[in-house]
Image (cartoon, rainbow, N blue to C red; front, side, top):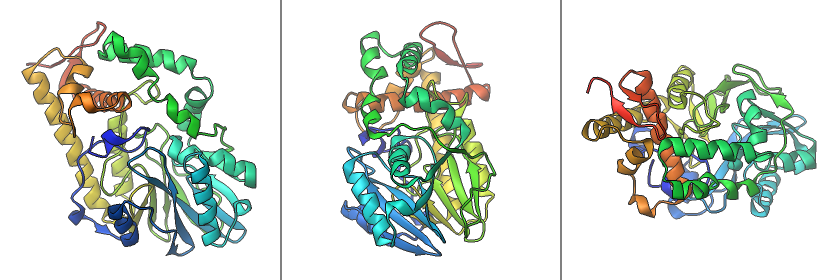
Length: 370
């Protein structure tokens, strides 16, 4: 988890030290300058019928999500939508206007995943345009519990935190730490489900959906085989790593899924990466090496921690790891994210037969053969 990750409130990218930017070629120079100046980047035409529209995010050090507009003969398709706030709605409409369109011209919204900064405004766009909303089935499956009928998820989250060793006095506050972001989501069901390899119906584009689980179970990237661009969502970002957490709505081994999905996008012929945050760049292969190196370093750090102090809970391990500030200065929400990241790494070590967990509550972890 990086310096940026402990400042955020939402299930956004997080985790990992800042990247060595010299290893990649930053093609979004105006976006990078705006990032350095702590301002919103401009709406930009990226050529070949592609536009980037920064949509501001409240209470987030990431500042904005980059919504992409794909021009088509009958209007535009959007990749992601932004948070559901009035400022975000105004920025999205202004960006459409800059590109020569209005909200009624949006024909479809392809959503990379259901986190609020990506899915939040999709329902409002549909209400005002008749656009279809597309998601991967794995994210569509967890959407109702996440945003509509949440009591069951809150109960499961409390048990998960107790099992992980969170102190009893903090359980209730921590289990509900994500509830404030619910207000940034217009919770609607999708119209279209996109599986891995599906070709979304976007006239004039040769898009392919690439299933890249890890940050969320149904995270999708979108790859245009002719333009050789990867619309990477939160799967690959230029500076920080996405938050890969284990929690009640995740897959069994989310970090292993993420690493496998990195191999999948590494095999694509990509000239430029269009991420959902920060700035676009070239050098996908180099960035993937950095992401892998980060996670191997974290796995090593956890192994050392268990060698020195066997029998710790995931909560105790998380507290002892390297973060950007003292644990007591990290908010409950980000402590929960840090715990989830720690668990995701422990599960990978468990799958490699490096560690094992106990059967009690809370679960305690130890090295195998130590």
